[in-house]
Image (tube, rainbow, N blue to C red; front, side, top):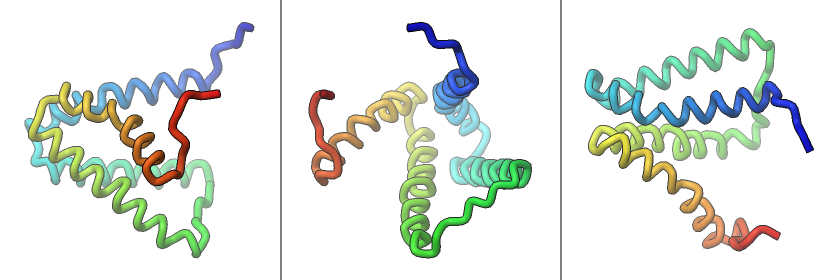
Length: 125
Protein backbone atom coordinates (compact mmCIF):
# COMPACT_ATOMS: atom_id res chain seq x y z
CA UNK A 1 0.00 0.00 0.00
CA UNK A 2 1.42 3.40 -1.00
CA UNK A 3 0.43 6.52 0.88
CA UNK A 4 1.25 10.00 -0.31
CA UNK A 5 3.33 12.26 1.88
CA UNK A 6 0.89 14.68 3.56
CA UNK A 7 1.12 17.99 5.39
CA UNK A 8 0.58 16.06 8.62
CA UNK A 9 3.69 14.00 7.85
CA UNK A 10 5.69 17.16 7.22
CA UNK A 11 4.47 18.73 10.46
CA UNK A 12 5.42 15.59 12.40
CA UNK A 13 8.93 15.80 10.97
CA UNK A 14 9.12 19.47 11.96
CA UNK A 15 8.02 18.69 15.52
CA UNK A 16 10.52 15.81 15.82
CA UNK A 17 13.27 18.10 14.51
CA UNK A 18 12.39 20.85 16.99
CA UNK A 19 12.37 18.35 19.85
CA UNK A 20 15.64 16.89 18.62
CA UNK A 21 17.53 20.18 18.59
CA UNK A 22 15.83 21.58 21.71
CA UNK A 23 18.33 20.19 24.21
CA UNK A 24 21.35 21.45 22.27
CA UNK A 25 19.79 24.90 21.83
CA UNK A 26 18.88 25.10 25.52
CA UNK A 27 22.35 24.01 26.60
CA UNK A 28 23.91 26.58 24.32
CA UNK A 29 21.61 29.34 25.58
CA UNK A 30 22.41 28.48 29.18
CA UNK A 31 26.00 29.59 28.58
CA UNK A 32 24.62 33.12 28.10
CA UNK A 33 21.56 33.19 30.40
CA UNK A 34 20.72 32.31 33.98
CA UNK A 35 18.50 29.16 33.85
CA UNK A 36 15.43 30.80 35.40
CA UNK A 37 15.80 33.93 33.26
CA UNK A 38 16.03 31.78 30.15
CA UNK A 39 12.98 29.77 31.19
CA UNK A 40 11.02 32.97 31.83
CA UNK A 41 11.87 34.15 28.32
CA UNK A 42 10.76 30.81 26.86
CA UNK A 43 7.47 30.93 28.77
CA UNK A 44 6.80 34.53 27.72
CA UNK A 45 7.59 33.94 24.06
CA UNK A 46 5.53 30.75 23.91
CA UNK A 47 2.58 32.46 25.61
CA UNK A 48 2.70 35.33 23.11
CA UNK A 49 2.97 32.94 20.14
CA UNK A 50 0.08 30.83 21.45
CA UNK A 51 -2.05 33.90 22.01
CA UNK A 52 -1.19 35.18 18.52
CA UNK A 53 -2.13 31.87 16.89
CA UNK A 54 -5.44 31.84 18.72
CA UNK A 55 -6.13 35.40 17.55
CA UNK A 56 -5.25 34.53 13.94
CA UNK A 57 -7.38 31.37 13.87
CA UNK A 58 -10.24 32.88 15.86
CA UNK A 59 -10.39 29.77 18.06
CA UNK A 60 -12.01 30.03 21.46
CA UNK A 61 -10.39 27.33 23.60
CA UNK A 62 -12.08 27.88 26.92
CA UNK A 63 -12.14 24.96 29.35
CA UNK A 64 -15.25 23.87 31.19
CA UNK A 65 -15.52 25.33 34.68
CA UNK A 66 -15.28 21.89 36.31
CA UNK A 67 -11.96 21.25 34.53
CA UNK A 68 -10.21 24.41 35.77
CA UNK A 69 -8.79 22.85 38.96
CA UNK A 70 -7.36 19.87 37.11
CA UNK A 71 -5.90 22.15 34.42
CA UNK A 72 -4.17 24.31 37.02
CA UNK A 73 -2.65 21.28 38.78
CA UNK A 74 -1.60 19.67 35.49
CA UNK A 75 -0.22 22.98 34.23
CA UNK A 76 1.87 23.47 37.35
CA UNK A 77 3.14 19.90 37.52
CA UNK A 78 3.27 18.98 33.86
CA UNK A 79 4.63 22.21 32.51
CA UNK A 80 5.91 24.75 35.04
CA UNK A 81 7.52 22.26 37.44
CA UNK A 82 8.87 20.17 34.55
CA UNK A 83 10.39 23.19 32.81
CA UNK A 84 12.14 24.44 35.95
CA UNK A 85 13.61 20.98 36.53
CA UNK A 86 14.49 20.55 32.83
CA UNK A 87 16.34 23.86 32.59
CA UNK A 88 18.04 23.48 35.98
CA UNK A 89 19.08 19.90 35.22
CA UNK A 90 20.32 20.75 31.73
CA UNK A 91 22.41 23.52 33.25
CA UNK A 92 24.11 20.97 35.53
CA UNK A 93 24.92 18.28 32.96
CA UNK A 94 25.68 17.78 29.28
CA UNK A 95 23.18 18.03 26.45
CA UNK A 96 23.80 14.34 25.70
CA UNK A 97 22.93 13.29 29.26
CA UNK A 98 19.79 15.42 29.17
CA UNK A 99 18.70 13.94 25.83
CA UNK A 100 19.36 10.41 27.08
CA UNK A 101 17.30 10.99 30.23
CA UNK A 102 14.46 12.56 28.24
CA UNK A 103 14.46 9.56 25.91
CA UNK A 104 13.55 7.34 28.88
CA UNK A 105 10.30 9.24 29.56
CA UNK A 106 8.09 6.74 27.65
CA UNK A 107 9.46 3.92 29.83
CA UNK A 108 8.69 5.88 33.02
CA UNK A 109 5.20 6.75 31.79
CA UNK A 110 4.49 3.11 30.94
CA UNK A 111 5.82 1.96 34.33
CA UNK A 112 3.77 4.57 36.20
CA UNK A 113 0.69 3.65 34.17
CA UNK A 114 1.18 -0.03 35.05
CA UNK A 115 1.81 0.72 38.74
CA UNK A 116 -1.31 2.89 39.02
CA UNK A 117 -3.24 0.39 36.85
CA UNK A 118 -4.22 3.16 34.45
CA UNK A 119 -2.70 1.17 31.59
CA UNK A 120 -1.93 -2.45 30.95
CA UNK A 121 1.74 -3.15 30.29
CA UNK A 122 2.61 -5.91 27.91
CA UNK A 123 2.98 -6.78 24.26
CA UNK A 124 0.56 -5.30 21.74
CA UNK A 125 -2.07 -7.71 20.48
